[in-house]
Image 1 (cartoon, helix red, strand yellow):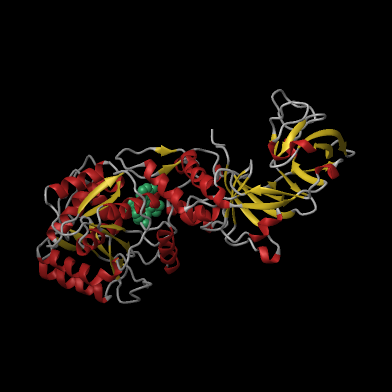
Image 2 (image 1 turned 180 degrees about the vertical axis):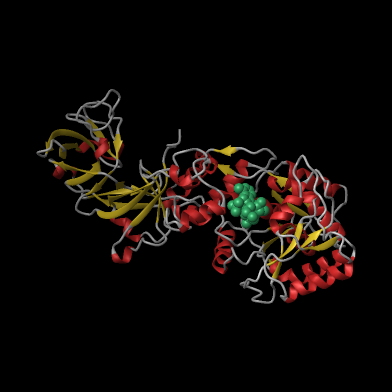
Length: 557
Ligand code: ATP
Ligand code: MG
């Protein structure tokens, strides 16, 4: 991580293991961590947890963290994903320095290790078709039975494996399996497949290979080759650890990384697996990988999330071994508290209602000097035009106010934010009975937060924008993407999509927002935190587009 904040020392089971390892002198060399994404989609906030953990540990222990693309499956992978992943990791403030690696760079080494296993009598070429391999492997209650090819001689295995590499066979005709233990209670140890034939072009190795190593084999060897000391992964790999250790041990690797598993991050009302995210993108159920409703890092960034807020969230969630579902409110709260400090304030009216100030001349001013941040004077002040006609939020007026309503109503009063107290004197409506305008009177003595001369207390404060100066802005309001808490548990997640997850309104905003660059954060007073869109916001041509990052108060109950 680039920032050097003075945080208290973190305590969790992984950090305890590392401290114990160090205390016991188990690592004479530097500690090395890694983040190993498969370039088959964009990263999501779950990956952020892993990124923050690995790069965070590297920073805390003055060690290094590698970024390694696990690019062993040419059918699913794409260069554009690699680019996006690097961008996201950097944006999160994590720096891999010179340590960018690709599993595909190890293909020759991995091949040699496979030959070594064959020579040791620990791997064999299998010629059963995939469904029979599965059948022979047995079940949790039944042991596996040996394939008729299990006892091929070393010479025959070496010869067949070389010919697999040379492209003599078709996909699926043979594969290479480790020879471990067909009666193991752990199915991963029942002669797992190490290599398969796949006549497919690889983005980085081209057509050099037509056999590709499988994940468990590749991953353990990549970690060991890079001298990774602690290989941190999610709990679903727990049952793969014996295989990981077996590979490292039997391939005579110099380094012996230690695999440690922790629980995945799960967030409610969303999906967190690249497979599901890809489906949403490919079926155009969202606008793309960076759709602000998605939990992808690019989506969150476009929505207005800051890297600091995501890092804080990952730190708050912490590391453990127990699976849990985290509430979206927790993520949003991290953003609120970050933007509360960072975002300048502006006024924007999302659902405008016209107000005319009948005694406007008594104000004696045509602009007000307003501070950009109520708690931080370093944000400075700005001039806000104050005119006879203003827009206020329609919801700040009630024809028949309910008990406790403190804003405008017929004969009611409210204070214009940073301005005067106004009293509603009459209400104009159209033929449909809809309120079209409020005619109000301002109390000139109340400027600067001063009380009414009559002493009556005015508690409601409302935001407003001058009609003559207002600029139109497209505001994108977001709601949860799914109507159910755990859409991944459904047969067809798309049936639970919330049809109202995006609503665009045309708001009246202060003209100062014409200065907003792309991806700039603001608090629209009393409404929420907003971020100008990284794609569609184009103030030079007068097009203002803001995404609602988060409302001021949680709407997740
Ligand atoms: P997905 O299921 O979303 O495709 P993945 O595990 O297949 O995720 P990889 O690219 O293989 O994605 O993951 C890279 C790293 O990120 C792995 O170490 C993985 O354990 C970790 N990771 C993935 N999802 C999460 C999550 N939800 N919480 C924490 N870590 C995660
Ligand atoms: Mg994966």
